[in-house]
View (cartoon, one colour):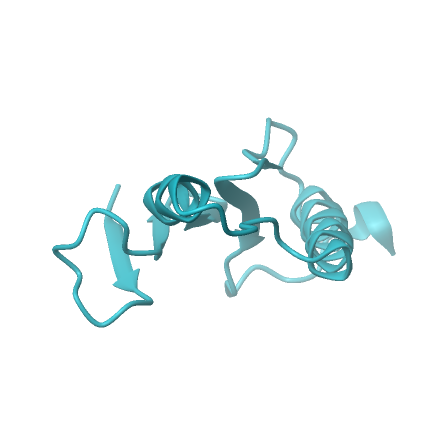
Length: 105
């Protein structure tokens, strides 16, 4: 499937650049905040590179709601998600023309 990348820093060629990757699949899109190079550079300089706990908690709630919604639309497979110091990944349901499933009604 298609992958799109949005760069969050001015110079996208810089390996320390933070980026958002979006990769589409049939039922959902995987959205990843890639901070790998940024974390490495911050650690090397002695700076704190941790994401705020409130941000991680909000991502967890968004992830849970998105997975619930995707499964309500009759998807029964695995949804890619996770987080760590260098990345945050969540699956986001596509807006489709499928009517709301009776599974979660």
